[in-house]
Length: 103
Image 1 (tube, rainbow, N blue to C red):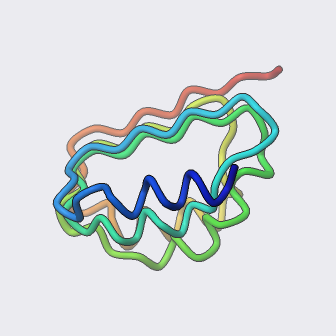
Image 2: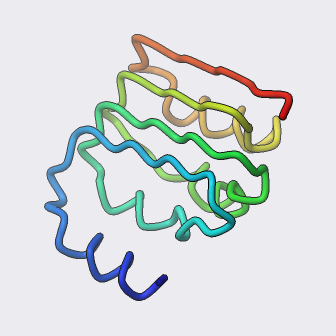
Image 3: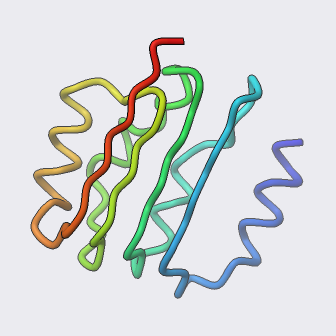
C-alpha cells in the first residue's frame, strides 16, 4: 500500500497549492513528501492517531513561504513540533484551525 501511495504522490505536480490528508485507518504515509510542495497555500491534516505525526518532526523545519491556511483536526503533533512549525511558517498564515477530538 505504501508503494502505491508514494507512486501516486510522485505524479502530483509540485505546484500544488492545496493539500488535505485525512486518515482514520491505522496506516498513513510518511508526511515528509509534503516538503516537495513548496507552493502550498493550504494544508489540512486530519488524523485519528497521534502516531501519524511522527514524521512531523522532519516537517517542522520545512519552509512553506506561501502557506496561508493551516488546519489540524482530531489529533495534534507534540507542542514543541507544532510551535517550531508555526515559527517557520506562521508569518503568512491568515487562518489557523485546530479542532481536537477526545476519542
